[in-house]
Length: 90
Image 1 (cartoon, rainbow, N blue to C red):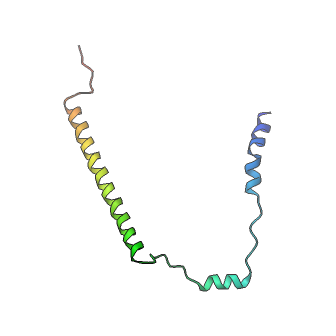
Image 2 (cartoon, rainbow, N blue to C red):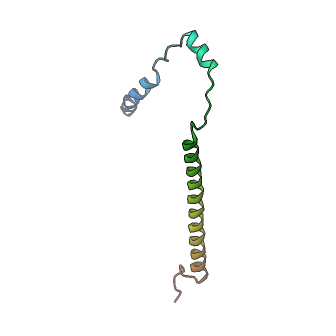
Image 3 (tube, one colour):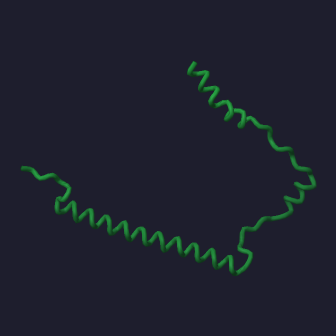
C-alpha cells in the first residue's frame, strides 16, 4: 500500500518528464539563426555605465561585509582571551 501511494504521488511528475520534444525548426529558419551572431554587449553608454556602477556596488558591499566580519572575529577573539564563555569553576 505504501508503494502504491508513493507511485501515485509521483505520477504527475513522471508524466511531466515524458512530454514530447518540441517540433524541429524549418531549414531556412535554422540557416538564418546560424548566420546571426549574438553579441552580449551594452547597447549604449547608459547601459555600460550602469554595469560599471553595479559591479562597483558589488565590490564595495563585499568589502564592507568583510570589514564587519573582521570586526566580529576580533571581538570574539577578545572575549575568548578573557575566558568570557567558560563557566566559573567553584
